[in-house]
Image 1 (spheres, rainbow, N blue to C red):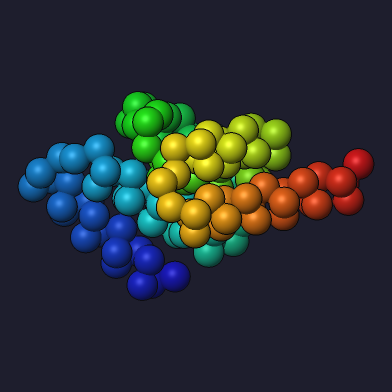
Image 2: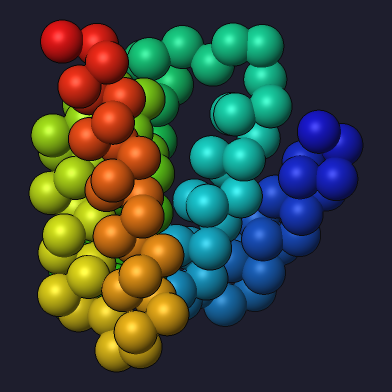
Length: 115
């Protein structure tokens, strides 16, 4: 976990020097890694992280929707799938689209097992 916390500190410093929505998006990814490694991060922590990420307003960026899909995966599978589908629509490469499609398949599998 120490590695991700150090990376998070570096992103904090970078954002302090020069704000960029894409840098902030990468920082949210790192925060999600830190939360994943904590034992356990609360749903309130994840919800706060989601609300902060939504404020970036990068709705035309497939990386944004991929991150939102990841963040919602543990809280709301249908919302996660929605974001992954938006990411697929916006993705430019077949490799990105394939990776995102696999994430949807995995979530649908988990959802089917839970129902």
